[in-house]
Structure formats: structure tokens, C-alpha cells
Image 1 (cartoon, helix red, strand yellow):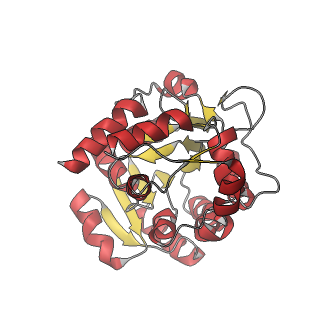
Image 2 (tube, rainbow, N blue to C red):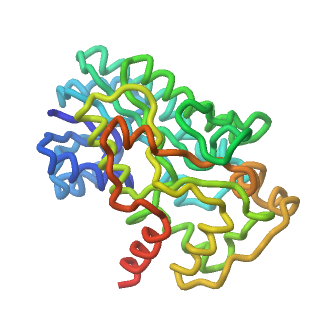
Length: 314
């Protein structure tokens, strides 16, 4: 199968290309920078420079690749994380990613229609953002929280947009948990080691995690099975912050995280950070296991954090 991977040099794209190739697929992968074309060549993909926010650029790249499936992994999260974190203003911090999830999605869908590409797989998000009512663990039947009244709302609206648009077009939206693995949590680990990543309140908010390699394997299955609808791509153990954050600190060789009251965290980091740490809802992966036949190499962040941070220190 010819796969067009939009966003081939991100943390997930770099793990996804080898798995697609190993499964026998031909991969054309995009980057926004000519300097990263050698990286794609080293991975074994045919690289192409593309601006996901330029409809003509997207149309030309897709026409050149003549794919059977488009995989939409375009974000600017690495760009956002490269600057000073602005947790109080996620609408500004992730502004380009929000555009890639709206305008970029529209550009890819238009290119798919113009070139008769029958299937699209798109990145969505499911870590702590389940609807904040009822139980702590949500399925695909539960809505995502709209974050009404929060600066996180534009980002959540963009996630809903990409899901609605892709599913309407007969594709699949993969709601990945919080990534960890090579290059994915370096900034968080640095903050943990500096004791600048505190537990807020009781740390009772749940999150779901996923190792990059498991996210990639689920994506390969979604491509090969021409999956449709929405799937939570998370590990087996959604957990509250008061469990995963101290464990992350221990695996990083850091002192236990400091504690911070909600009022002070809201002042310093904003509403979204407080919500995540105190009220967040995690997600179930039962549907992906059942319908895609997905098996995880890293079923829990507990062993996953230990393995990854040990690897990073050696």
C-alpha cells in the first residue's frame, strides 16, 4: 500500500515510518524543512517538503505521492515546546497546531478528494480531556470535555473538528494518549528534575499514556484495516497524577514532586493545568484491542517510564 504520511519527522512520525515499511508499505513522508529530508531518507521514506497550511502545497505533494491512504500526523507541538512554556495561554502556545487540525485537515481532505484517495487516518488526543462527569475512565461513546470558559477551549474545538471532518469523510480518528518514548517527554523530565512540575491539590485527576511504538503499531493497523470512526489509543492503566508523577520523578532519579494548592497553580499555570491534575478523566482502550486486534508492547506507563528513562541514562 502507498502511504502518504503528513508529518513524518515528529516524535510519532519517526517511529511510524519504520513500522509501515516493515509491514511492506511504501511511504512518502512530509516535512516543513528541507534540512530534515535526510532524516526521512535515513528512515527509508521518500521525503517531500510540504506546508500543511498551504492548500496548493498539500495538493501537489499528495498528487506526487499517489497514495492509497493519507495519515495526518501534522502538529507544531515540538515547535511550541521549544519555546518557553505558556500553560496559562494554550490557545496561543498551540496556535499553529490548532490551525493544522482545522485548516490542515481541510487541505488534506480536499487533496484526497481531488486524487481519489479513499481513506484517511488522523491524529486526535485522549489523555486527560474526557468529559468531567461520571466515572474517571471514558470510552469512545463518551464526549470529550469542551473546556468551556477555559483558554484550552480552542484546542479542544480543533480536536473535535478533525474528528468530525475525518469520520464524515469515511476515515478514522485515533485519540492518542499522552506520548512517552524517545524525545517525547524530555521537557517534562527536565522540569521534574528541577522540581518545577508540582502535584496540584490532591493530584486526583486521571491521565492516559501511550508509548510511541504502541501508538505507531495501532496506526499501522488502522491503515491496513481501513478503519473508520474513533478509537482511543492509550495504555491499559489510566491513573491519577498522584501516582504517575511521583513514579516519573523516581524513574528520572529526581526528588518527589512538590505540592501546590489549586489557587496558586491556577494563578501560575492557568485553568487547564489545574483541571488536568485534579479533575482529568482518562480513557479505555478496549475498543481498539477488540476491533483492531491491537496488542501493546508497553501495557503500562509504570514499566514504560522505567524502561525509557533507563535507556536515556545509558
